[in-house]
Length: 249
Length: 370
Image 1 (cartoon, rainbow over the protein chains, first blue to last red):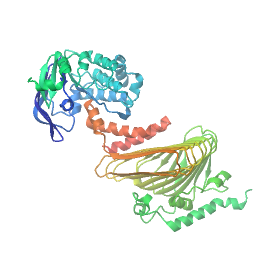
Image 2: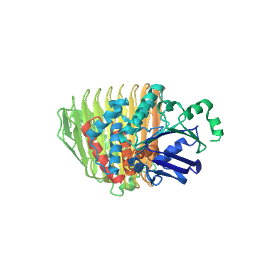
Image 3: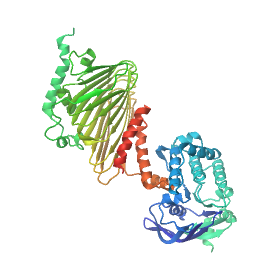
């Protein structure tokens, strides 16, 4: 589903990713682990199409299509979803209105019929309950005054609502206490699906106790330096990044 | 029968105003408060003309009485309040030159919003008096025309005025001076929607003159082409425990110019005063300009005052977030511009009036942000 080959990315002229190669198939959950400054967020932004992240070499292929050429909104319509580390606050736009605009923009782009307000509301309500996203949150301005946990739960609610084919979770565990983490992880696990691929980006092994990956890749200095099964996370936790990064992959 | 001397009072005030206007003339850009608005140049030789601009009201709700200032036999309440609040030379000009206008008095709770429209060229005056405990929603519209309007508002103890002003794009020069005095526990909530003109300026001079008096001002400007819109406020906290808030949002495209000058003065011994001021502008073109100048003058010791101003482009984080959720760039931009303005429009209490302002804003945005 996702194939990244020899990817080089620069931000403001500075090389961040330096030859990253990665392949994730449908139905699989892969984790990217790495220390601060290894290029984890750059990878998530370049997959979602943020301006200012320049691909200088290599390729990103998604379902056989060159992803780099597409603007962010087209990637979203084709099923790419990034759960962000820092969801933005937008005063003046209610959460519900935002969800409806986004959902219908994606449907429009795919040539599907738009949903009316009641249809969107029903669909949102059904998914909101299990993630403990309240009616009151849906009425408030998008992310304004939301706690860290509420923001992350809303990201996962969007993932449930938009039903992406490729979901990228960028540091979804950051700023969450153990109960919030468990709730978010359960939300993610119910979305595991044979037709869906997930890329879970995290600094810590903790999240991977709850979202158990099929494969783990260690990112350092802009490249994948180690790969393995789910047990690699425990090894990282025990030894620390430095030792793993030094050892030959 | 009132004594002739008392009947002559408003006439004397007019003569005084005429003398002031003759002595000072129209303000030029050399006057600090007119630095961003070149009135003499925009107005040209004919000025506002010698005529009197027109006014009209909608149906008078119960509790509201009207006196035509062109008429004879000025009632006592008009004699008492008319021509008293003359905060600047343009207000003196309208007091001296207008041969008419409207005076409104409210007792008790006005049963419905009152519409008031100014149109045509020339000078015009208005006086609005809310007696103690009275309340009114005033919906003002400023139609096209080269006009200088002078409005005096008096809010008695515990009176409450909701003032919504919609000024559509004006092809000419339009200036309006609003002078307002608030008594104890009185409240003035205002929202000004301005779409600019060749030159347009709304100047507010507000005196918080009784304990617990409060003024809450908000406004939006949507400017395109070469429109100009200036909002200048001067809020004076004359006694303690008074409060004022100001929130102005401006969107400027084309070669337009948005101006906000806000001065808050806290008098000596006006302790416990609370004032907040915020003005923000979004520039949609390289050639649009915003001049935001909040200013504080504090002579009391124990006060809370905050002010801020920012000019910028749309937030790139927000834009990316919306696009990453599938919302196309132009739609995402429009959503963010609406959201930027909505923050100020949401302060309008009356739902129908808020919808009217939204409609005017949306129509203007369709042109400006296209």
